[in-house]
Length: 124
Image (cartoon, rainbow, N blue to C red; front, top):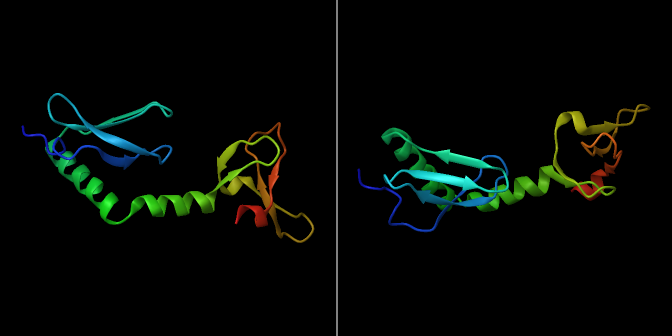
């Protein structure tokens, strides 16, 4: 089998866990894979149909400027706790509202012992 991705090095694709750009590598048998050290992710594409679909996703990532879109999503939905400095993604269970009028007060740090709140103005 001829490697589809072998002649286009280095090619990048986002890790499905952290979203950081990772190099698309090729196995000895010419099949594409990703490896993300910080997350411990290893993703191998093994069958011909999957390889073709993955190739299209990699091409679309560059063509449709996925890196800019991921940066915008990260800016909008990833926060840093002002108290402990932990970075976290927004989920509905982290939304903190006022018990008096139900208005948004901010976003709670996911660390239950921290108690930090990211205020909406700082999140934007």
